[in-house]
Amino acid sequence: MTASCRFGIGRNGERAVSLDNIRVVLVNPLYGGNVGSVCRAMANMAISDLALVGPERLNMDEARMMACHATDILDNRTEFETLHSAVSDCGVVMGATARKGLYRQHAKSPREWAAKALEAAQCGKVALVFGREDNGLMNDELALCTQIIQIPTCEEYPSINIAQAAMICCYELFVANGEFKAPEEKSPESRSEFRERMFGMWRETLLQIGFMKDDKADHMMLGLRRILSRGTLTEDDVKILMGIARQVSWSASRSNETVLSNGEPVFPRESKEGGI
Image 1 (spheres, one colour):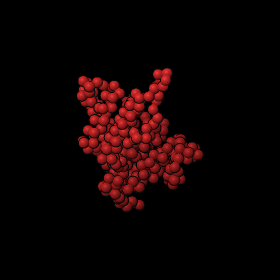
Image 2 (cartoon, rainbow, N blue to C red):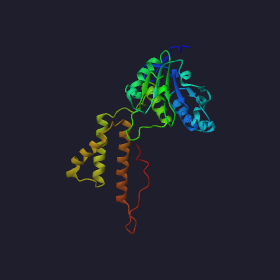
Image 3 (cartoon, one colour):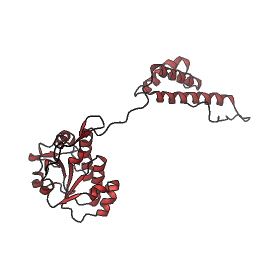
């Protein structure tokens, strides 16, 4: 049965492929907790088609607990006796392996394969295949894969938990598909005139509290400007910094004005005038 072409509009406004055509296949999973964790990872990345090959004696209560709010993926899973039957309707079959060797030299990272997977998912099923927790995929199973995925890791410890591997692969597809858009800063970048008012307030405040002397003020203010220039200063940022300077100045003036009869300072109450 051929899957229909599916498109949508990604969050960045570009044409996006429906991730409904992505199937995650787990071969002989050993632990229910891992299966549930894979369900949760899939739900995070808008992928819902889960296939299990030869699941035996899985603790489904553990799987359900680890799936958290992704139990619908677990409940709607399909089960197969062989990997061949699980991927029979898939055009592209990508198998994940940590092993290296002669017939694995064409392996690529999930990021490198993401575009290929999404292109194939436009009009057909794409399988992401993960092997057993202890032994991975066998050679005959890897032979069914049209592409091989290797997740970059340090050479000393290349093995990755199956749920973590599934999350990495699904994440790369989700991002490459334009599904994610970083939040935008609502406050505009501060105007130069507004920033200069703020720096002027801090100059007077730092002089007032004795942090710097007149002859060192220009030098110290260059340091402060350098610190605050390492990132974008929005108008809201500048308002907060101006409010802090105003409150520090008010507090310093009050503490200099009032002392107890025994000479100890009276700490000023919170100012109602020192807000932003």
